[in-house]
Amino acid sequence: MRVTNQMVTSGSLRNMQKSMQRVDNLNNQVTTGKKISAPSEDPVIAIRALKLRTTVDQLDQYKNKNIPDAMSWLDTTQTSIQNVYDRLQDVYYYCEQGAQDTFQTKDRHTIIDELQELKDAIYREGGTTYAGRYLFSGYKTETNLIFQDSAAKEGLSYNINESIDPAKFVGKTVVLNEVNADSINDILTGTETYTAPSTNSVYQLRLAYSDLDKGNADITINVQNADGSTTMLTPVIKSVADTATYYDVTDGGVNYIPETGELIFGKNLYNSVKNAQSIDVNYNKSQFAVGDLRPEMYFNCTQSALQSDGTIKKTEFTVDEEGQPIQYEVNFSQYITVNAQGKDFILHDMGNKIDDLSNSVQSVLDVEDTISRLKELKEDPQYKNNPNAMKQLDKMLSDADVELAQKRENMQKLFGNNMTNFQNFMETVSAVQAKVGTTYSKLELIETRVTEQYANFRELKSSNEDVETEEAAIEMYQAELVYESALATTSSVIKKTLLDYI
Image (cartoon, rainbow, N blue to C red; front, side):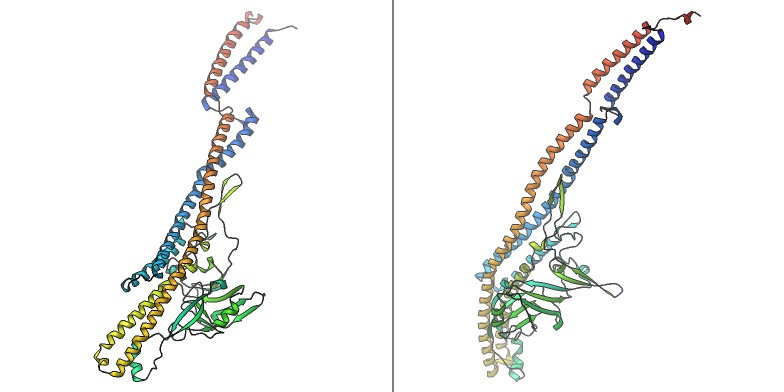
């Protein structure tokens, strides 16, 4: 084959261009640290880089955002649950003291205040927030578990459906016709007949709330019997102001005391409903106190909200029996539930039991005050020289002593019985706490695994995309030598032709 000068020149220039192209590629690798600058240079590397970058970005989201956020949420939850447990334990210690009646008269007022403060502290934990979200309100993270201030409860009323387990019946001995020192004048003038205190055995159920609406249409009671049938009860509405009768219930009747949220059953009725499946009570409440638990977090209910134009907006709420888990994705297709719901460990019954304890202490204080008042009246000149008055005062004082003994006994029994109740409450809280702790431990293991995955995939990504700088520099140096050699060789190969002489 004949080789011409043109063929030699073209081949030399083509090879020089390839050498220059290699120098340029290696120069880009050295300066950028990347194997390719465009997908067309190596489609395999480009496709693999897209996959690895997506994986690394996801792992970075899990490692540096989702997992730390979930841990912080769980940390705050654990602290709040522990606070609830500690406050319940404080109440338990009071129960131990009260069961022995080690309280002095001068200490009883302080005890009542401290018990109420413990109740408020338990409920306040329901308003714990993390990053502006309420922790214990399920999906309603923008809504407090409690009415945190007056504005939160303004214009709201509820129709509440509460199902009560008959196992929650409490038998108690109550005092009727309590001695009232202020009635001495009416008794002496004959305008009031003195009735000595008496006791009555009743069976109590507590609704979740007190200070309920008082109309006959504001409450219905349906007993779901064991055989599947339903029995409707008609309660008699009583008032705590009538101390003579509000615990005075017929054997087959039930009294409803709106102020305390109590249902007082007579003996025969109790015996007929104690083995029922449930006792379903529908009642209305339009007066709430700051710190009360919001009904929609616990019960199926209807909220009526007064609007600015005077209309009423009704909203139906239904309790999700399956719960309302808030989940974080913490690894590929792996989710962690970070929230605990307040309804599972901050219970109405806790506050009601504390109120019962406070009321029992207050009832003893009231009788002690009555005794002190009667003793003062005996020294009052108005009665001191009046034999009838002195006789009546002695009778009332004797009855008040008996009443005091009964109420102190009731108080001791109540504190003793509530030792078990508050142990059970603490166990309930501990179960939730253990679940949160287990979740946190699992999250720590996931964090370790994700950290390892993140490091491995970053290494794979670097191995796929990045060049070894030292090797690339050596290769570039070699490529430059080849290029310079090509220049020198080409200049000696290309000879002068005939045209150079024309």
